[in-house]
Image 1 (cartoon, rainbow, N blue to C red):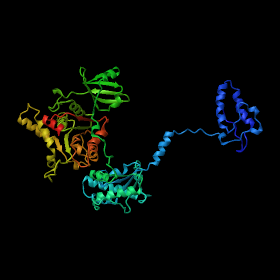
Image 2 (cartoon, rainbow, N blue to C red):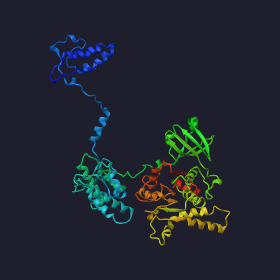
Image 3 (tube, helix red, strand yellow):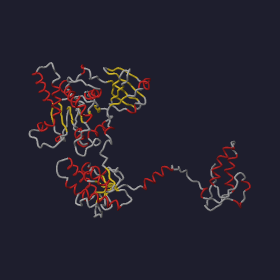
Length: 556
């Protein structure tokens, strides 16, 4: 029911004529129930402490006319806000942002760490700036990171409107995700540490700053962020909040790394068989699948079905559109007629890897697995076949991270290739195996083949890769687990038209300091490239080197 016409004056009384007019319109309608329903909001709108009966408007007189209240004024419809959202927002506002105190090793490990803490604030003690200045000289990765961090701090300090005493906005240099502020230690802080901790040591001074800030900013949470395990242990012993720098980790657990293969469920054919379409194209059979298994798949992921008494299926996902996926059967490299440079694959995962290595549409391949699974041998065999037999690439370029397991043996004499020679023992061992595959050739034939192979393989150092472009090259990056994500990006971006890059490594054997399974460049590349139509990954599971190597990998 429409509300009565409001009087021209706010303090005026509602006239009897205006009150009766809406009721009279409702009475002329045929549906009394609907009129009564529409009349209820009017009763609520003009209701006072002693409302008159609307059913008998003729009995009203001038003595009991209703005063116009604020409730009678027409108000716009306001959509109510759900109470849960209001509570969550209020609680989010009340919670203060944390104050993170960064150790020097965090800044040297990741120069962009200043912009990784979202809405939280960052505090840098003066001793951290001193240590940062001491590490900026040199050509190492640590020195480069130190200089980059210094440039970032200088850009923040020079920004217009920034006050170093009230904190510098971290979003001032074009990082909108960093909504906190950067604070420097501008005055001495009073703190007390146990006498057993030497006061002159830099780590202990940082712990003292954290202790002083905790008392100064209570009840706000102050957290020390450090890559130094011993420093975190000392901080916990003193009752201080501390944490490792987690933002550089692609995965929390190495077991969660994308394997590149997916085992189809046992009831796959019973649940998806009615909707499967298949057709033949050349030597491959294609299957179009739709069903609950499709959302779990990625492009270039391998799928396999193995069940007793039923035919096996080994295929690769070539296309995903919505809830429909297309499988393509694989080439069987376990058979001798499909051998690659005399090498046949020995297990399922090796066959998956060889299909990726021999596919010209795949530009980037990552292979992971324990020692002895055949990563280097498969990559070299496929590379020699595509360079010498198929002439798809002009030459093979091999490089690796020069991180030693034990003590450094010092400087090596000779040219670039001669210096890299001691690091390429694995390459020589595999070339020796591949050189013996042609049993029909005599001693002279094998020697000529080895010379031809050596002429098409170039060994390069990673130190001279920046600025280069590889055209139609087959690039092998061995021991890639020892690379940082930045180094991995530098190497992959060297690829020009017609170049294929293969990264291999075992993330369980990382020798680079401060690198873990979750922060390795190899893990970073596997996670970022999964699902791209021109890349593929497979984790080799079973060792094929020898029974001694397999047993040692399991028990040691």
